[in-house]
Length: 132
Image (tube, rainbow, N blue to C red):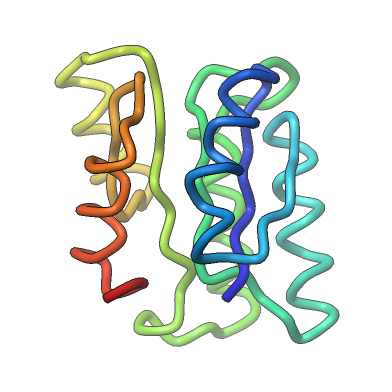
């Protein structure tokens, strides 16, 4: 399975890659613009991502805007809802409004607050049906 880690902070990218590397072939994007480009390229190559772990606060294009573009592209590509990429938003902000907006306005699949522990991440991946 294939995962895109979208994170502007080097340490956070490294931690996520270590945690997710046991389950996924991981690729990296450092901001929302790179994430949208990587998403398009993966679909063009017929190797779409199964999971995107995306930080909310990033330079150039934040995670919420990138997520909205990913969901828009999926509609344009006529991706069936059951085959849409699972998107776990990550952030240091434990803000109920951000959580609500990420789910209901932007189309996030899940939300994790940093620091992300292996237990929290594995529990979420299991809940999403990505691992057993």
